[in-house]
Length: 104
Ligand SMILES: [Zn+2]
Image (tube, rainbow, N blue to C red; front, side):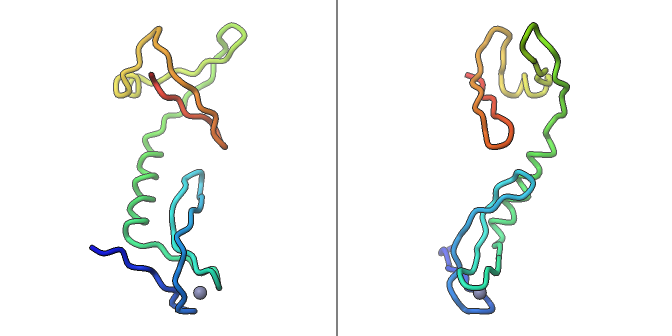
């Protein structure tokens, strides 16, 4: 399928692909440079749906004290899926909101 440019239904101007953020989920959309009209195509809508599905798999964990540091438990499901091992190392990347943990 050829990639077609989207046009604003009001101004008939070509829309620009932009990135927005909603509830901590970033998404792509088309925005009109003139009137600010926003439009999402099917692919973009599916992307958003997938990201929200990913969020629903999120687990709520309690922060505990471990010596002078704080610790969070990694749920078994994630341990198995991500192949995390006791004594192994992970990389913590701070993000705008929260952080990402990547097992090595
Ligand atoms: Zn417009």
